[in-house]
Amino acid sequence: MSAAPSLSLRRVVRRAQVRVAMVATLVVATLLAGASALLLRLAEQHSLDLVARSMAYSVDAAVMFRDATAAQELLDEMARSENLLDAQLLLPDGRPLAQHRRAAPDTLADRLAASLPGLRAVQPVQENDQVIGTLLLQSDAGWLLKSAGWALLGVLAGAAATAVGIARASHELQRLVGTPLLALSTRTQTIRAQRRFDLRVPLDGATEIQALGQDVNALLAQVQQQQNDLRQRHAALQSAHDQLADQSRRDALTGVANRAWFEQQLAAAIDRAQAHQERLAVLFIDVDDFKRVNDRYGHEAGDRVLTALASRLRSSVREHDLVGRLGGDEFVVLIDPLRQPEDAQALVRQLSRTVAAPLEPDLAEGLPTRQLPELSIGAAIFPDDGDSVDALLREADRQMYRRKSTPRSRP
Image (cartoon, rainbow, N blue to C red; front, side, top):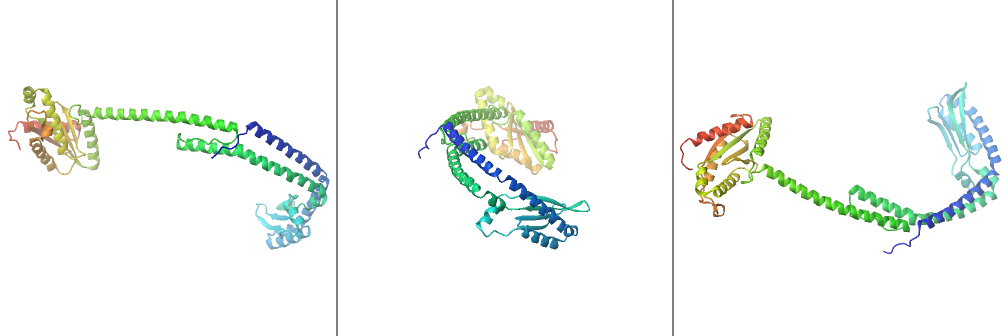
């Protein structure tokens, strides 16, 4: 689509000024023509005021008794006799008691007279010096047509010619200035409301408006680039923040929850269980004879054992249960919720059996043996064995040592 011919805003404004001058000339001519009818208008207004007073005296009784039918009949009769365009009889509270509107005119002259602004008269209706209503009268402009005659026709002809010029100028001004500015404003509002800095404003209209649109588009391009840069930086910062947050909650070696995060989650679980009157369990796990693994095979092998053990523990509990490492070879498991107290001991036996099973070849790679060391597991149940983080960990630790000191065979 080809762009519209460019015109400077100065030329557009100059054309508008010329046409406004023409309008002003016609207005002056109209005022001069109207001045000749001023005396006649004053006389007509005086006559209308006299009619209003006469009608006010005639309808006072009907207004006093709120007789709408009588008031309407009187108003219709007097309005027709005086050839009034409109007559209204209002009560003090503004409600109409009666109203007369002249029927649609038959002749062209009458219709023209009715379409022009006529004269108005406002007359209070009084009874014993008290206002009981208001009479509003309006006449048509027939007197003006009769008195102004040819002068008015000349003014109308000039006004018609001026109106054509104004319409053409207004259309051109709208095409070159108004429409482009409106399109620019609409697009910028859309961009601001939707934050769509990838959109661009249209380039149309006068030369200066096109230049303005180009500047706006250049600014939008810069804002879009900055927005993209900010999004990328925010995404990188968010990713780094998430990684740091996750690292701060995880044990660096095994990837399970560290002590601080586990205790924080345990405290929240206790509050939740207390509010819903539910149970939860804490398992305290210690690797039997782990020191021998480190001493015999080295700390690197011991780390691989702990990592494999953590993986086994995670796969042996529910997805929403939490496995944590307190340090060294001590692990903890949060079972939330716990349906029955007996489920805790069943889980202890299940974990022992799971750890006792030989590791798969891919998990056992780098380990001195496919068999993991035995575990000593103690369980504490909320609220039976404690109602705080320290109390539950302490009781689970005590139960773990009690189990460690009890001779047993691998499950």
